[in-house]
Amino acid sequence: MRHSILMTFFISSALSIVPLALAEEAVPNFTTALMSEIQQSRQHRFAASVITLNDTQLASELATTVLEFFVRPGDRVAQGQALVSLDCRDAEDQLNLLSSRLSETQASLTQAQRLANRLSSLRERQLTDNLSAEDAQSEVARQQSRLAAMNTEIQLAKRQIDRCTVKAPFEAAITAQHAGVGERTSPGSLLLSLQQLSDAEIEVTLPVNRFDLHGGVKAEFELGDDRFPVELIRQSPVIDTRNRSQKAWYHAPESVTIGSSGTLILTEAQPLIPAEYIVSRSGQLGIFTLLENELSFYPLIDAQEGRPHPVPSELENAQIVIQGQQWLQVGSAE
Image (cartoon, rainbow, N blue to C red):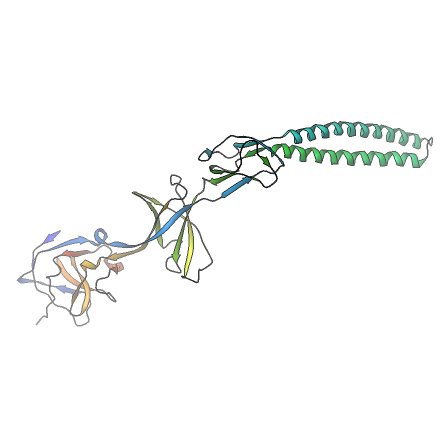
């Protein structure tokens, strides 16, 4: 809003808000605006990187041969998707052998239970001795133990067969292939490298005790021409004593590529009066405000020349002079 009014100026010796009364002397043209329209926020920019939650190398758990790779480096895979097929004939034969032994053990257990029941009945009629009946019960217990052990071995064999197909532990991108089809593997031989795509994080290094990350600042991640609001996940409790810094991690947007380098922008909540609107009068820095057609000089305590200053609470909705304040003067009233 542009103004041209007749005024004279005076300032109190206490340097408080000083009204400048209307008079016959012409006041230079000036422009005002609401504080909410011109206030600025202090921003801080830090280099940041998008990192994966897991950078994993998948290895063979068997001494066998690679039959087939279902994926190649660069492929995107879903959790549980089959990635590699290993020769599973030995594990399958072992499972078949154990299944045969299981049937044999079950038959032996059934026979032992029949004998134990018959001898128990004879003992009740005193047609056999106690020792024979007890031996029969012991045989039942032995066969039950063998059956339990056999079932455990079968479960182990089934798990070995499951290991013949290497699956993705999470949604990921394949980054490297470490073996080839027909290659002999041993437990621990590397097959594939992959990086988790979901739940990526933004990692940044920040000065110690500079910001209240849990509510005092707004965080945004800038990548190229795009800017995304991001939320804090955690802040390291460990301080790097060499450069007095701490690491912090934020949720990365799903659309951002793992490994991208961008900028974390932290915006302080405290609004500031831009330095260009602050002027010096009678040795005091302040701003000119307009209230009900009265122009006043408002001193800003502890203001520094050339630096923005926090907006006082009483000026949050004030109208201040943003152009022409350089020519406005505060005079002494006679």
